[in-house]
Each structure stands twice: as C-alpha cells, then as structure tokens.
Image (tube, rainbow over all chains, first blue to last red; front, side, top):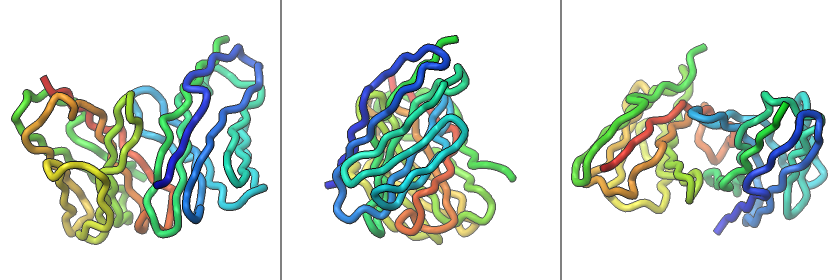
Amino acid sequence: EDQVTQSPEALRLQEGESSSLNCSYTVSGLRGLFWYRQDPGKGPEFLFTLYSAGEEKEKERLKATLTKKESFLHITAPKPEDSATYLCAVQARYSTLTFGKGTMLLVSP
Amino acid sequence: KAGVTQTPRYLIKTRGQQVTLSCSPISGHRSVSWYQQTPGQGLQFLFEYFSETQRNKGNFPGRFSGRQFSNSRSEMNVSTLELGDSALYLCASSRTVQGNTGELFFGEGSRLTVL
C-alpha cells in the first residue's frame, strides 16, 4: 500500500526565514511525486511534478527535490502570501494519487 | 477558462438523510475524481469516472456512490448519512485518467456537515 508522510505538521516562519518541508513516501513503482498548495476554503492547486530521483523543479520562491525515499519543498525567503497548506502526493504506475496529510505553513510579516 | 465548479458549496444534513453533490469539470476534461478531506485523515480517494465509466474506487462503503454524464459532469451521492461523513468533498478533473496524469484541477469543494 502506498504511503505518504509529511513533516512537520505545522511550521511557523518569519518573513524571509528560509526552511524546508519533508515528504517521505513508500510506493511500488513510482510514476510521479506531486506537490500541491491549498489555501483555506479552497481546493488544492497543482505546483510540481517530479518523476525521478535527482530531479528538481523551481517556481518563484519554491524548489522541489526528489530522492528515492523522500521529497523536499524548499521555501526561500518566504512571504506572508506563501502561507498555505502544502500537500505531497505519490502515484504508482497506472494508479491514482495518494496524498499526505499536509504541512500547514504560516509566514508572519 | 472556467475552472471546476462544485455545488452546493455548503450544506447541513441530519443523520440518516442522503445528499447529492455536483461537479462540472473544466471544458475538455473527461476524467472526474472525488476526494473526501477531513482534518484527521487528509485527502482520501473516493472514486474516478472517465467517459461515464467508473475507473477506480477507493476504500469507502457502498453508501458512497457516483456517476458521470455524457457531458462529463459528475455527481456523487451519500446515503444514510453518519456523523463521520462530515467533511469537505473535493472534485478534481483532468484531461485523461489519473493513471496517465497526476496534474489534477480541483474545485473549491462542498462542505458537508451532518448533525
């Protein structure tokens, strides 16, 4: 059974204070690992797809990396508008996505 | 381009009642997936429909059912509601089945409260 564990559950940062979110996973035959962002009262919004170990993707202040056992979402010099819940999901070949429970990020000005 | 539309956004029901939720996917998207989101369990997969056929089903009791129409719009139904069914129900659409893509476009959800 595919499993995704995200840590920490919640993270509070000061504006400009860089940090990383972790996503550990077990999956039989990884097709892809996905990061989504969810704002309060909204549905998740797609951010990145990573397909193989060593791959990296960047978008503004976010950078996602992937190893064979985990993925990191690095947030560089965050701003208050980066506050959201970040969800990680894995997908085995020809299967549906399995989501983690998310990391709630709060960035204070 | 219009996004995924879910109705109703909020609803309150009592135990034993049934509820029907509706989802209109992005134009051109033929796959619709449904998820249940709760604080304790996170996002859990209910089922996926593609071209009016259920392609995948999660580990939920038979009280949870769905269907898809020829215009790709989808509905899900929960019968004999229980308190534990209180959750945010999210619909996500994609051009093809989830097995071929992981990029899902989510609606804003229908928040169900069961009293």
